[in-house]
Length: 162
Image (tube, rainbow, N blue to C red; front, top):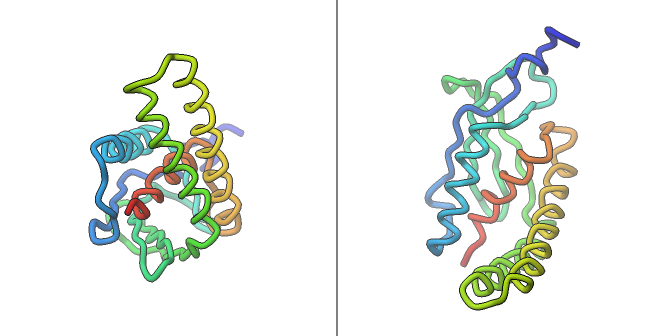
């Protein structure tokens, strides 16, 4: 309905920071993906903390004691609260996703186009699965659209590259 807060674009992230101390060392390829995910996320996202009547928001992501911490604030810095998620449900999917990413980067450098496409399709499917797990785990806390969840999953992976 026209004029609803959800239609006004208020429910979005305008700033995102990753806790540098939580991030694992990254290859050039992974660092590039991280930067692209942040850029794309800030360009277009839907992020609605349940029970919060208006945005926009700032998001600070960190990994503390094997828990992913979403520190959500109003634009300007006023704290709204934190959401803590256990990383246990993500561990296998992240491990499998990284193996597929390595295969994909190797394929780009050495394989035929058909092989690259096959590996890329598998990588994208695994990424989609990870983003769906994120959406499911956050459903009672933060509403996300599919693309926002995909980009956040990319950033979550940044904490687990060892």
